[in-house]
Image (tube, rainbow, N blue to C red):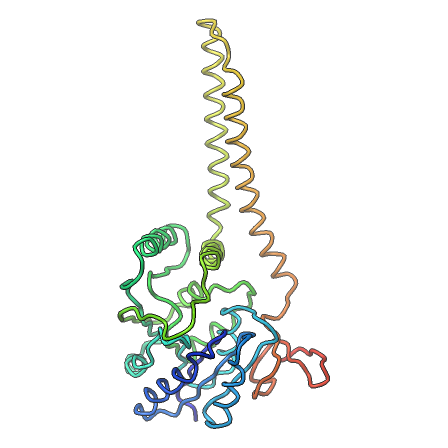
Length: 327
């Protein structure tokens, strides 16, 4: 029986994958637990899938799934959770920024009854600007979101089997795992470790990707941006009403000319900007509803050493080239 599953999403990690695997096995074997390593190739364009095949051929504890293209880390984590069979499941990255030597500590805390054990990194060795932006973002998140998301608490965590089952029961396509981890609840404990730099390669998270990910987090777990748009509209209406009454009073009492072109243009530009921003917020929610209504699978599997029943509801490509639903 598998006691622990390690889920590792990979995207263009050929430079570091072999070193990561050696470090991971070296950390797991002394625990004495029966384990499996579930690698998910998220449509890599380098030699990642070749390395995974070699690892699977050399070690029966290694299993892999490869997507037909890059579907994103959220889909890769979901596929890995569906592959996992262990009583405890650890999610981690392949770039060695999630040190494997902390897994025994996570397993020990799990044995004390915790369903989620979170390895929370500090912000050491990060730039001043990035650290400030992260703090500001999480401060905003705490005010807006209906779930608690902690600064530094990422995907490096251990989940009990019932926590994994709860995550897999959530049907949404637009997944924001940091929020989902908090939403399912269960007893959670965390510990902090020093931030580690990538062992090789470049980060896949550009500024644009981080911005989009941040927007996903704000919108996925609350409707407060829509409420804010309503409040802004009401305040603008009241301000415009007071301003209009002030102009009328000046004209009646002092015969002052009404403000001219500059005031009008300023008001039009300000109101137009707010209207466009509000339409953008509404459009984001409508777009998400549209995506959910299509009910497309989260990913398409190109090849795997798994059976269809393990992967769950996705699409798997048959040898003849036809796609078929799974699960």
